[in-house]
Amino acid sequence: MLPLSSSNAAVFSSWTWGAVIALVALVVSTWLVINHRHRDQTVRWHQPDYDTASNALLLLNRLSLATAVEGVTAELRELVDVISRLRIAEQRSPDLPFGMIVAELEGYRANVLPQNHADKLAADESLLTDHLALARVQGIRLEAARIAIVHVQRTIEMRTRK
Image 1 (cartoon, rainbow, N blue to C red):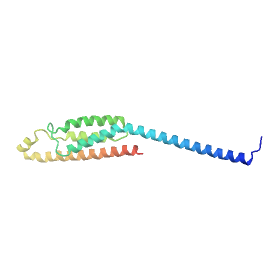
Image 2 (image 1 turned 135 degrees about the vertical axis):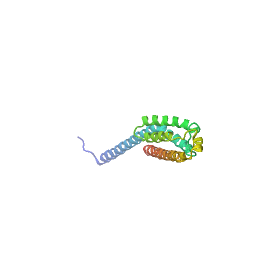
Image 3 (image 1 turned 60 degrees about the horizontal axis):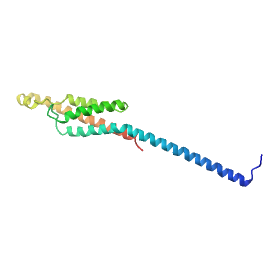
Image 4 (image 1 turned 90 degrees about the vertical axis):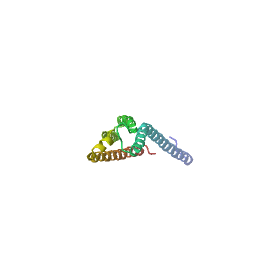
């Protein structure tokens, strides 16, 4: 074996450090590419769920402007579609609490005032407390659904953060 001269040792030493630095750069760049691809896949996966939650929030904002009356409030037909989309989102991402949103919206739909509530109220004023209770429950259900939607959106945002 030939002894290494000082100039050969210096070249070999700098060559070794250059290879180590190149290897570290390769590992870091590979990790960055894999990490960004994984995040992009997560964003693409959760985007329909986030959009569904946003659409539900817009509908809830419209519903909160007035007491819902069966057959009169036009947004109630849209609510059925939103609930269906939320159930699909729940199946896509069972770890997100879409079921809580669906439960609150189903509770809201169960507390809708009957179409002829004004006539019944005019005939019997004792029904006023019942009608006010239904209106209060509607507001409580809408606010609970709104809170659940914000929670889902924040969870998705945390998962897809850069």
